[in-house]
Each structure stands twice: as structure tokens, then as C-alpha cells.
Amino acid sequence: MAKEACELCMHPGGEVIYRDDNYRIVLVDDERYPGFCRVIWNAHAAEMTDLSTAERAILIAAVWQVEEAIRETMQPHKINVASLGNVVPHLHWHVIPRYENDAHFPNPIWGEVKRTPNSSELAKRKAMVARLREALQDRFEESLL
Amino acid sequence: MAKEACELCMHPGGEVIYRDDNYRIVLVDDERYPGFCRVIWNAHAAEMTDLSTAERAILIAAVWQVEEAIRETMQPHKINVASLGNVVPHLHWHVIPRYENDAHFPNPIWGEVKRTPNSSELAKRKAMVARLREALQDRFEESLL
Image 1: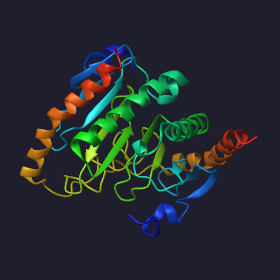
Image 2: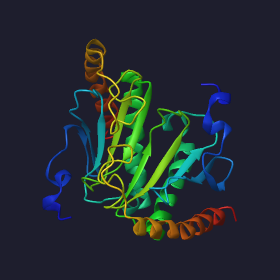
Image 3: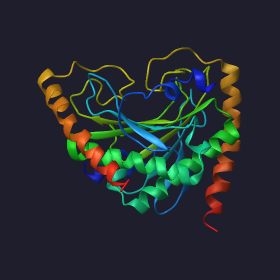
């Protein structure tokens, strides 16, 4: 795939919370999944095993940092982590806070919808995103000092 | 969840290709996805960030080894890697060879079915699993020497 045709080469892919030379962290705009983050490798590569061992370590350490920040601030029942890229074969990790009463639980968010989430629960989670944003900025901007 | 109630504490979770003190690698019995592997942490933990940094490194290095072995032997169009655990919250990584004409592509394998895979293509992939099994055994048993 040419870089010009790749959505994640051409666009940030969400609200950018942090970006360095290697990767960026974005908040995904998904009504049903507040706190859903993606960690996107900046260069165009399809698979983790296309990266060097050192690059893999950098990217996956960022994924664990995002997972920790989500767990601390959003108190999910479970974390889902995935690198798929079937539609956009540009390396990006989904880090998704899951709750027993969310739209798809226990299915993956790409599976069959199980319910309409309770709107007040969803509003509570949306309100937590401000803390998540701060927690991510603290974690990742500290690493720049 | 009590260990006694956890499927991956009680059962291997597939055909065990390799096992050490930390994790095991199993081939998943899925008719539509020959070569689908899981890397399962032996101890009962739910999330990657429940492990120490050293343990995370051990487990994810095994995932990359499995990804490389699948790419070399099964020639997939794409690799999908995921740690979900909503149903069985015991740390396990799915490593899935994907093909443009497989049952769900470009959807995740947990999404809507897109087609019935061509049976001769599927038979070819099934035949490749013997090579994958050997490649995994070579990679992981070497590491024991």
C-alpha cells in the first residue's frame, strides 16, 4: 500500500494525546467506548515483526502505559488489547476499557451487539475521560523530561 | 475468579506445542483458521499489567516468535494479535493468520462472517500446519538448550 493511500499515514486517527518520533497516542471517538485509545506507530509498517526488536519494545511499552492509565482512571472490568489492521494495515494497537454492561460484553467490540448501554453509566465513563487524558499526558510527557 | 473455575487453569486450551515454567503455546482447533495459535500464561493473571515488567517481556517475546513462525510457514496476508479475555479472564494471546479470502476478512474473526472459505484453499492451509508445528518446536525448543 502506498503511503498516500494509507489513512494512518495521512491522518492522526483520533484526538492526539501524545506524539513523539516513534508513535502517537490517540483517543478514539466512539460513543459506546469512552476511554478507547490507540497507540499508532508513526512509520508505515504492517506487523509488529516488521519492526526491529528495539522498536517493538518501545511500542509495546507504550501500550502497557496506556493500559495502566486506563485501569487507574476508568476502572474497567477488563482490558482488551489488539493489533489487527485488516482494513488499515498500518501498525496500531487498540486498548479498550471493557465493562460487563457495555454494548458488546463479553463479546469483542467487533462482535455481535449484546445490549444498549445504560446512558447514565455511559455518561459517568465519559466524565472519566478527562482524568484519563491527564493521566496519559503525565505519564508520557514525563518521559520527555 | 477461583482457579478451579478457570478453564485455562484447568485445561491446556489446545494442542500444546511448547510449554515452559512461564507459558505454553497451543494450536487452536478452529476449522476455518488453520495455524491459529494461542500463547497462554500459565499462572492465573487477567491483564498484561498484572505481570511484572520482566514477565511481560517474556510473554510478549513469545508472541512475536509465534507471529514470525506463522508468517514464515503460513504466508498469511495479515497477522491479527489480541489479548481479550472477556469470557476467560486468564491471560492468553491470540495469534491468527488472516487471508483476504478467509471466513471473516477484513472483519476480525469475532465479527460478521463474510463468506464460506474455498475448501481447496483451506485444505492447503491445513497442510501447512505441519510446517508451522515444526517451526514452533525448532524456535522454542532451541531456546531451552
